[in-house]
Image (cartoon, rainbow, N blue to C red; front, side, top):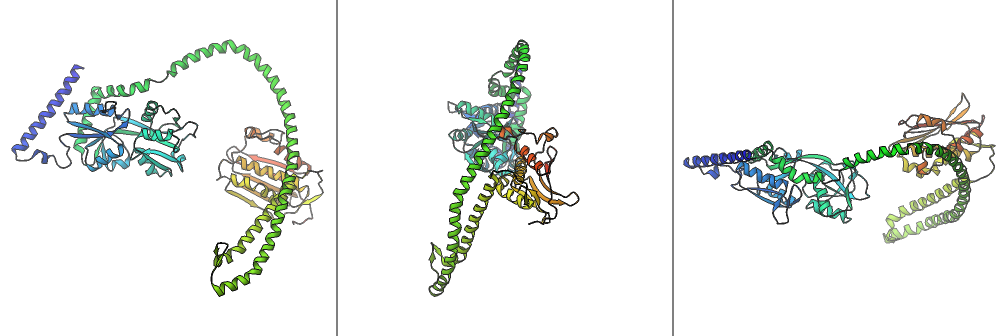
Length: 576
């Protein structure tokens, strides 16, 4: 240590002597030493600026003095390089602006970016800084900055994340804060959605300010080099900082300063590794003791599970039967309650349409004679074109309500199954699509239907086949993982086999090969956690078999599913 201190003092003495001799030489030559330095050379006292609230890198301590890792590093560099420095800390945006204006000579800590490299020159980094997304407890995790689109995000004014968000144009609404502490306080108070803050200062401030309701969400990102910066053209001053930093690295002083400020933070956590090792040893002992108990308990559990499953199947059958009964009663009541006002609307809208058309000539004559006038708060010149369209739209809407209610009532109607009806497959498919239109719209933006207009009818029960089509389309919607995935519904007639075909193809997640043979098993479902009962495809298979048809599935995981319904055509019939 004594040898290192002597070496540092010797370097400083040599640099002072060289500076003195250079000044004397310029004076004897008649050149002002101040002018000889040039406009971009540093002042006699070098002003180094930084952020006043960026612990543990740089901050104002309890005594009102500059402190932190950056501050100690700057003082050490000044010592070994024989530099006279003045450290000024303030708001980051203000300090950066003062550097741009030439009011300070350097910033002792700035994160590097390609955009900033166009304005500033950077020393070799003396730290690597990671950034983190902070949120209130319970908020959604952020794994990609693109997830911040449309969110209110707090960033430090003119900080590296402010620059990054502007450069990448993520689409978030940026809320500017003077310091990282201000950003975290705003977030903890319930304002805005997220805060983008340097990881270590954010954790440090969260602990110091006791902001217990905010946490990091997702892993740290955007590791950036962090070092001294000066304006372009001030390479001489930057070279002094770079040289001093290299001396501190080689002599071990920089590492000592790093350990001083960051060692306690890195070592203050719970010794999870040791706790984990101890827990592992305890677990091994417990496993040995409980091994025999587990084996015996497993045999008993299998018997209980088998019996429980049998009881659950019986209970689910009863629940499903009760649900279907309740659904029929509910739909019948809803249809009655909606049909009455809907019929009134249809009747009155037709009358209103005739009334307006009878009044139209009188209104037109008044308009030609007296000019424009208000009708319903709007000018007649505008309303005379819009009122007929408004009446037509209301009439079409009421008719749509009537049609949907009729479809629901027909779908839920219960009665003995008679296969004597002549039905058109295209009409059955169209009705089913209308019933699940809302489900389709929520699932995909790409739904396509193709009808074989020349397909003959089939003999059977149209409402039952309609139920099968609904099950196939709803399953296709539930299999999609994105609205960009498509669903295609196609009807066609195979004259060679005399069979009508309905194909429902989706671009969803697909079905595992071992599950394909079990799709028609009662109560088999892969959507149990979403409330699936596993009866839809089983009931569909029974209906199709009653009609003498077949229901086949072709699928590969990740490549979607193709369901094909085949029904015997009623030969000699024409499509209706």
